Length: 446
Figure 1 (cartoon, rainbow, N blue to C red):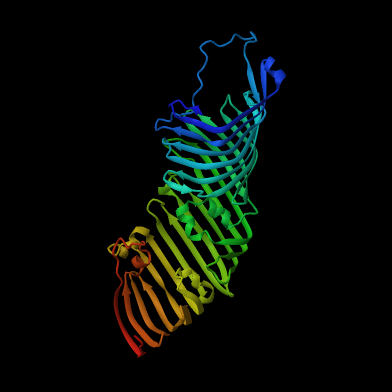
Figure 2 (cartoon, helix red, strand yellow; figure 1 turned 45 degrees about the horizontal axis):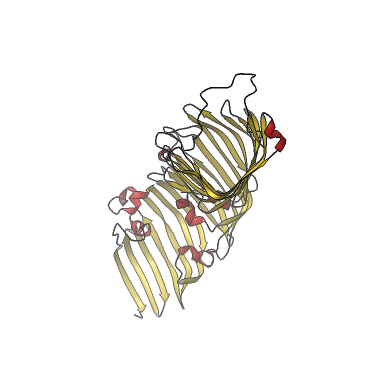
C-alpha cells in the first residue's frame, strides 16, 4: 500500500514488480525495463480547494551542484497496469469517475523534460459523473495513443490517437495545456465509419436510455471539438455534429426497420458554455416505413429546464411501430395512423403541469385508417376517426372502435392529455384526464 498525503491509501496492489538493467544500477541513470502494478486500486482525490492527495514527494532541501555527478536519473521503459480499479474524485469541479483498468501500458523516457509517451489501454467504465450528469455507464473503452509531453511547459500534444467506445472508432487530435488558471483544451474527434450506437454511448445516461436499443447502418459522420479553458469558473466550448445518409434504423421494438433515413444533428453548450445555454437540434429527419414517409424535427434548449420544439409528420404502419407503445400486452398491429403536422413547443415543466399547460403550443392530428392493435387474444380495431390536438384539448371526431364484442363510436373532447402522457411513473402531479364526450354503442360487451 502506498499512502497519500492525507494518510489514506493512494495505491493498493497485490503485485508490484520491477525489472532493472543491472549495469545501470552503477551509473547515473538507472534503467527500469518495466514496472508492473496488478490487482489493486488507484484512489485519486482532489478537494474543494484543488489540492490533490497524490502530491507525496518532497523536494530536496539541497539541490546537487551542477556537474557534481551526484544526481541520479531513473528511466522507465515500460509501465503496466493490470486489473486496477481507478477511483477519481475532484470536488473542485464536481467530477467522479470509477473505472476498471483491465490492461494499460505506458512507455517513454519519463526522466526527460520532453518525450513521446506511447500508451495503449483496455478499460471498462463504471461511470463518469460530470457536474451531476452521468456518462459512460458500463462502457468498454480502448485507445492507442502517442502524445508528445513537454513537462517544462505543461503541454501535451496528441501526435496520433485512436479511441474506441463500445467498438465505435474515433480519431482524436489536438493539445492540452496546464495553465496557472486552469487547463486549456484544443481537441477534436471525428469518425467516418461510426454509427448511432457510438453517439448514444457518449450521451448522458438519462438521455440515451430510451434509445439505447436502436442501431444504424448507412453513411454516418461524426465530428466534435472541445476548445477553451476549464476551471472552477468556466468550461470550454463544446460542439458535436453528426448525421446519417442513406441509412437504416433498427430496434427490437420495430418489426420493420425505418429505411432510407437521413438527418443532421448538432449539440453545443452555447454562449455561457453550460447546461443553461446548451442546445441540441435534430434537423431534416426523413425515413420510410413500408414506403410511407416520416419527417421530424426536434430542438431542445436549456438542459437545466428544457424547452422543447418538436414536429412530426407522416404515416406510421402499426405493424412496424406497435412495439414503441411500450405495453407488453400489445403483441401486434395492422393498418395505419396518419400523423398530420403534430407540433409541441414549450417548456417541459409546463407540459407536466395542468396549471401551466396553457403556455404550451400543441397542434396536429392523428387519423385512423383500419388501424388495429392485438391485445392479448383480442383485436382492437380503430375503424376510422380523428384525434385533433388543440392546446390542452384533444378533440375526438368520429372515432369508431371495434373489438372484444363491442362496436363503439366516440365524439367529444379530452383534457390534460399532455400532462398524463408525460407524467412520471408515480404520477406525482396527480394528473387526471377530464372527458366531455358522447358515446354510441351498436353492441357493448361489458
